[in-house]
Length: 227
Image (cartoon, rainbow, N blue to C red; front, side):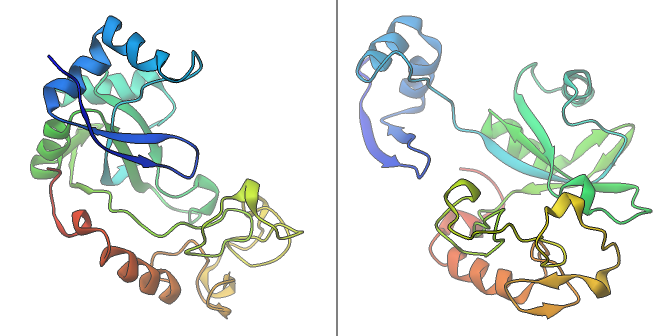
């Protein structure tokens, strides 16, 4: 089989996303050692091939679930009839230090390597610790620098030109994880310049405006399932 690249897009981290001529060509490039080696040799020995991942959100997952635990992730696959290894990794959508004091559940991001599995979970839900939970596709959102916490920027924290780190919860000059502010009323958004919510709040007016602007340019955000 001939493997042909249809499109190529460079990412801000230096990676390149290739769209190949068919799903069979994509599988061959990932699974066949000889084909993969020939492809890598076109660049350098330090290059690696990573498959596309399909991110979904499981809502209200008990915080007793441990995203970094391979045992919890494998149990998640076994309990939902998912092939071993199809869940690439999991993480909380919001840092644990940003939770409310009495919070018992949180939203979990699940990165799946198979689009059919991702769509199945979106349609039927996922069972976590004997509880059936709803899932939805993780939509593309405007970026937020984790140093200055400005939304819609084109830089990451390691490229930020601000001299001091800002707190995403209260706007002061300290790390977000070290913030002593716990009540919503005392939070301060560095984007809106107002109190009552943090810079990471999905209800932030600046975030909503930037999200709507991005969605108009990303048609995939308008569909429930992955193609």
